[in-house]
Image 1 (cartoon, rainbow, N blue to C red):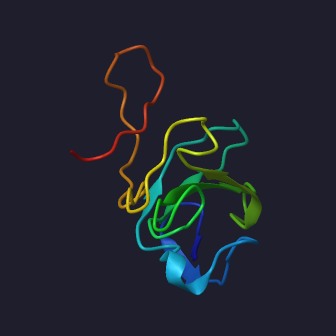
Image 2: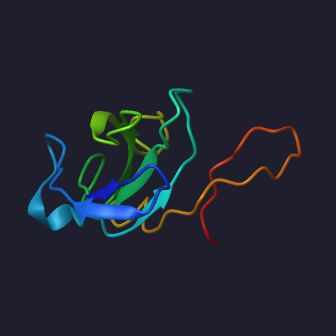
Length: 117
């Protein structure tokens, strides 16, 4: 995991792997800044694990990693996947194969996360 300084520039690399992540999940294959979801002044990160097996072999997941302001150390992480959302999952879905910085496509000031087609 990357340690960011106050200008959101990589300051150092630290190890962070949430509980339940297996070596074959490809956790951290793609990482994107996600904006400040909890309003504490520190950006959150989207971290992919496209070979996570929750809901089926290689169904995939994305972790939202919340950071402490100032230190930008990990405060909390939440795992998102199709199974957790109550959606059908199929082995090989590879949800979370990539992450992209959120955009404001609706023009309402809220950032929406998107994935490439």
